[in-house]
Length: 206
Ligand SMILES: C[S@@+](CC[C@H](N)C(=O)[O-])C[C@H]1O[C@@H](n2cnc3c(N)ncnc32)[C@H](O)[C@@H]1O
Image 1 (cartoon, rainbow, N blue to C red):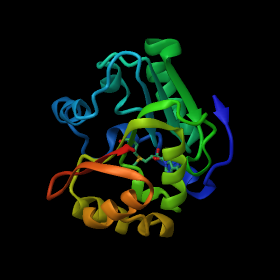
Image 2 (spheres, protein in one colour):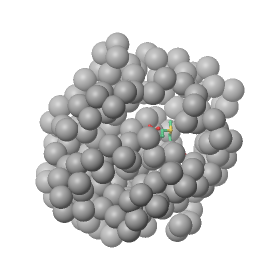
Image 3 (cartoon, rainbow, N blue to C red):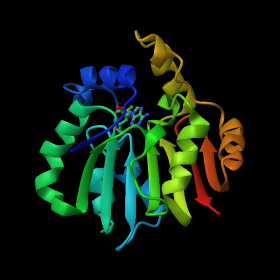
């Protein structure tokens, strides 16, 4: 596992949650996850970057589309240890597990086809910087997806009631604001939703 600069406070927060992450809170069913992933047109040969992968909730679902390889990236070492235990033996060299901060990615320019940020975007403390890093590593025509398997109100209620002062500030903007941020960061908007049960935005590097 590779280790470089990390947002230490949020890394600690998620490390402390790692033992109970897989059993706490509502998680989406497989049908819901696959419906979302189908929109991203993952297929063989594609490189998929799962930013803020956590314990790898999406990993087996991403592999069901037979991608070339998957980079499972997260700040929190202990979340990645869980992921490693569950999935490294199953997916072997097609799964790269990497401890990194999205704000300072150690990934070559234009090498990734699809970037997924599931349940992580509000935790980026400098969104323009994070988005510029994501744009840099994405190939032209590549896809960026920001997703929550829950509505914005629910996400903001959970974050807003956190005992951790930083997490309390990690709130999701209405998608109308997110659209502006993403467009200003050099992406073309493709599809979005912001309702009681879903929040997502899919964009392309033009
Ligand atoms: C709410 S969890 C979501 C985990 C997973 N995507 C899921 O849906 O189960 C957010 C994850 O993002 C990671 N994270 C937060 N800020 C990050 C950053 N700046 N760079 C990389 N990962 C980050 C956290 O460590 C945590 O594991």
